[in-house]
Length: 287
Image (tube, rainbow, N blue to C red; front, side, top):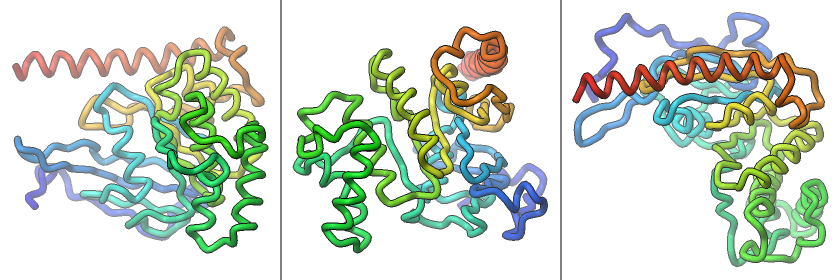
């Protein structure tokens, strides 16, 4: 494959050995990552040499204009996309394929319609060799955690969208992932259900030790949930800002009117609007 990045300076790939104390503590290390797709019109650079670390237990959201490569980055962290250049390390090891310690939650729940809530959640542990009794114990503990004990025997079609998404999150947690990847998991929900799910995730986060990378279009959601917000440029996706969210925890939707929150939101929105305008102007020039 011809390298569409060849006109730029040579890439220095990441070493498997961290170069600093911060990198040594990172659960996820992304170094000079580029993703290129083949299309009928030629090769397209979706993500262009991005680098960031995520520490154990940290909650990091990725935001940016549509088409900036947010979901592509998440798919790469799941082992579903292969880097064109650069490297992704998880727990110090190069990521080359999906791993059981990396869980993923999508925008749609994608539950097994023929399985009950309990059996949907127990599916992963059973697939990994747990006995039926062990898998049921894991599932029941998670069902209690997500507040659906009365619905353990229910089937997905009888549940609301928010309840189905809670089951999808519990199913991802059933394998006790060290890393939980979430791709706009509340994007298909109405505003009221979405707010409830955000509160549920804030509470759940305090009870699990997973490192979370969360993709969203919603700036309010990103700031409310996250320790850091990574803002990406319009395609090809690059990192514009890695913003630390120094708002006290525990958090609730009450922070949405506080001055510190509003300042962070303005900073994020200004960057994203400028990028959206830049991308729009470039399309006009190309046309």
